[in-house]
Image (cartoon, rainbow, N blue to C red; front, side, top):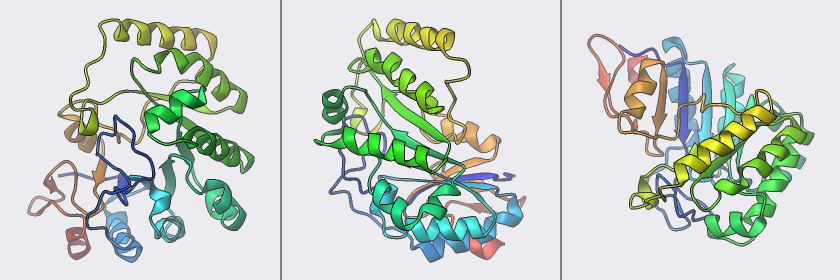
Length: 269
């Protein structure tokens, strides 16, 4: 039986970027069923008696989905800790109209793959992605929101890690380094033999230079091995797709009830 304390919600698989390594194959032309914000809030209400304490909104790009602001506001009104993972889309504009909402986030994760704009944009498949990410990072910083800079690292950007760490230190942000997950569009990716050594060397340098800068994925969202979701469930963390289906497969929420779809939790509450 699982007592779920945290839920990662992929509200959409649509994205305005097309990263070559996206593990869930999000992109501009991705289509599929998406639950409404009202339905998600019904699910969250049903999960609170089951131990739910926090929700992490991601995608795709969550701020391309029309219901993200409504979902965040509703989750916060339920007393849940809220966080987001974004590539930076619409953040400066939202800060003008929804500063209070954004200021209540427990953490804002922003994807940044390089301090060199050309490297970041190339990996993201779109010009201007770096500027968008940087503007979002500084916007969250100005609102007093704790920031985690999330970097998907491979051969092409491992040399950028020290410079990103320097940015994090200057903003009192935390640094979440995610070695590229061989899944989705990166399912055929094969790194060089030297990558592991270069990554370990960079991380050691960062640890020696900056105290408590590096953080783990506390939301247990991006999978890095086949049993990732099963292990996350054991500590009460689950990820659900835009259509409401749990990424882990069936979840036992009681001795008599097993669910595969978050919508089933509404009737089980």
